[in-house]
Each structure stands twice: as structure tokens, then as C-alpha cells.
Image (tube, rainbow, N blue to C red; front, side, top):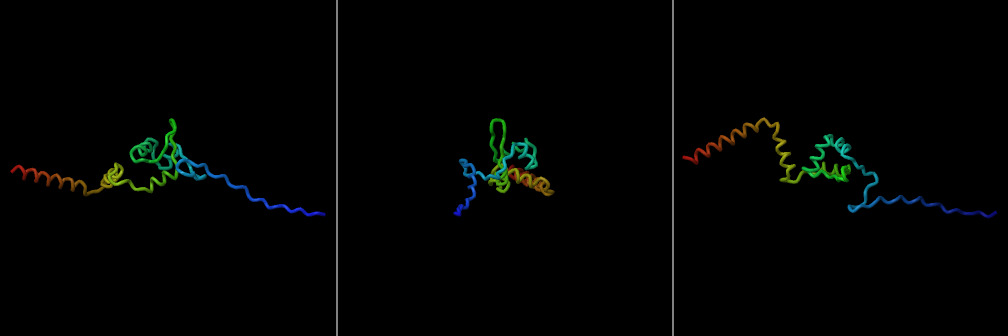
Length: 122
């Protein structure tokens, strides 16, 4: 009786991820809608939209719907604000919020300013 040999089959190739203009998209990439992204960042939806507008949080609007890539949000969180940007200035002011010495410093600045103004008038 004749023996037949069978060739071992190669496993089927995995499909390539869909490519976009920015490169291939990871198959496990999570896309959030507005509510999901707000919950992920633990802010309200209106605060999230303010972050998109004021601090360049990456997101895309499709008609009336917003979409946010989880990896892009994580990159945004890791990146410090650009020096001199509105976000950087506001974060500086926020760091002074609970400083007990700020009020004393402001009073000292105004006292010196008055001395300078009075000295200029004489």
C-alpha cells in the first residue's frame, strides 16, 4: 500500500492592522467617547472640553460626537506644558494658591512701590 505524505500547513498569517495617515493603529488601541474620556480623567464633560480648548488635549470631533485615543491622552498627561503657555502660567498660579507667605509678599511689594512713588515725588 502506498503511503502519502502530507505537508504541514503553515499557520494563517495574522491580518495587518489598518493603516492611517499617522501610521499603523495598534489593534488594542482604545477609543473613548466624551463620557468615557471624562470618566478616565475623572473630570466632567465640560471640563474635558475645556482641556481640549485650553490645553490642547488631543481629540477629534466627528459631527456632534467626540473621540479620544487612550494612548494620546496618556501621552498628553506625560508631557509637561510648554514654557510660557497658558497652561504653564495657570499651573504656576495654582502652586501659589495655598502658600501662606504670598499675602505677606504682596503687601511688601506694594509697600516698596509706595516708597518708590513717594520718593519720586520729592
